[in-house]
Image (cartoon, rainbow, N blue to C red):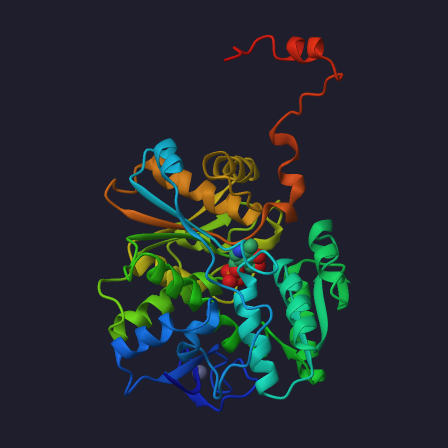
Length: 410
Ligand SMILES: Cc1ncc(COP(=O)(O)O)c(C=O)c1O
Ligand SMILES: [Zn+2]
């Protein structure tokens, strides 16, 4: 597809392909528009299958005007694993885990950042920046280092230590703000008007968001060119969730795959659940909230794409649910025990919601469900701390046997 323009999602006004993110007429968000004419579905599939082993195999569906250069940190083609023991525990039929922690900086944010940094280079920027809840910080710092660009990364100062360490190490300018993510985002929006920088999720947001479509493309390819029946995924700003829908819709319209949109189920933490609250209240507006949850990566109180996430859940017969901090920890444990995958708190939120949907009987036994695990457990270690006990013993047989006396030795 040839990239054509930036179009307003609300009034449809078209803009040039520059560093712009809102409509000058109605202030609606801008989205990349493509010219699909002349694309042959079979030829497009062949090109994908002959492409690189990562997101750049989908370059024809990404917002670039020239060819993609080599990328030493190419994200993507992360495992999609069938989780039968998880399905059994939850009384479900067919569950798949898309483990997007298996990316260069261990979250799905590598996808959006790889696209935004490549676009920043195409547009001639020398400095990239972001407002982050943690994972984006890791990814921007790393991809800027790999691309030889300088970077400024803005985060709430009280972020998990692991996420701060996994950012600063790349030699970025790490700025901790005394405030929450929404304060960070406000400052970055102001700064984007003052500095000649590519803020990946502010003035480059339309391009950045396109990177999440690759999660949808990969899922379809990995399922043998089929669409799942249901998707369960996390929501912070709502961008990834809505772009999963956009990616599938594009391939349906272009004839690369047949079927219909899955049922979309979104997951939020109760301590920051503006989209789940609007869903429950039946409104289309997300009232801003002040976050208070262990799921810091999802702690966006004023989500830019919340209304579009609501539309997608409602129009596909899905829902947007929230879970407590205890349910998040239990969700991390459930995934680890049944699949060997250790996820961060965002994955705990997603697992908690999957468990809730299964318990409520919302999911039919013949449904094929794909669950998006978007981040790595080693980045939020505090959430795992209280969930098990280590057996500490002296280095003697007797002590071992005393400790495990109650267990039957096979
Ligand atoms: C691990 C993880 N999952 C999901 C999300 C949700 O992203 P979005 O803002 O696109 O909804 C984030 C956002 O920071 C994240 O860090
Ligand atoms: Zn507009």
